[in-house]
Length: 370
Image (cartoon, rainbow, N blue to C red):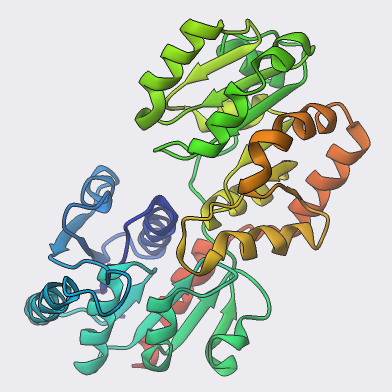
């Protein structure tokens, strides 16, 4: 095979960026000399995360449409989209890719639409159980569509679909540390049941409020917590804990650098229902309570969560009910060993173990077929 040259486009959230980097890493494992260029959106987190992972990236002046659609601001959004397509055309002429991969997000729309128009085969990867607008719009132009859930033919042409699962970050599991030692690393006792609450890098307001409303119950239960607040809420939460008192069985941090140790320490995980988070929980076989965010397009996190709850692989609490119900449910669940084992096993049964490698192989097949 000649020298590989591949564009990967998308981003905006970790749920798009982590799979994209995983796919790039898998391609590099198949061909170390492959040239991979990322195309993202200016000002979004991919412009930092991708270079940190060792790859080049070019940013586009692209933004999402404003709601309602007749908002006059969408005139400038459309102008930026056309500027982005013009920039992509220049990138393609200079980089000369043999295939374009889209993982969702604003940038992938302009990139794959332009690549298709220039005769370059395209592959899209849809992380969610309810397809996003960008990927639905690109489906007709894609040669292959890699999905994480069954039943996606309601969104995409059946003959293009490949069930691959979502790639997960490397280093999620550290078998060299015991659960007890992982807990001690967070300043907790090694012998107590432990709940991990994660709201993502920015945190999740509802999840944080749920803890603050139940500090007395938390302090009295023989159960300990690792609480990732997110940097955005860090100061507010610290002031609330100063005022109300911080329970000794509560480890509070705005950011967790060793997620492998956090997952290892936990008997139960509370999380939003983003595609990447769910894929990690399934990969690790972790029992979880999912609280879908209501602030996402087409309520796709609820659809993601229901894909697990319908198989008894997770519990679900609505965002609107979380402040009242989440902590009591978590405290009851973490001591129910039979339920924990059932949830964990069913989640593990849904996991895909080599998603990135399968997608990378499909990318190379498109190049060979061309």
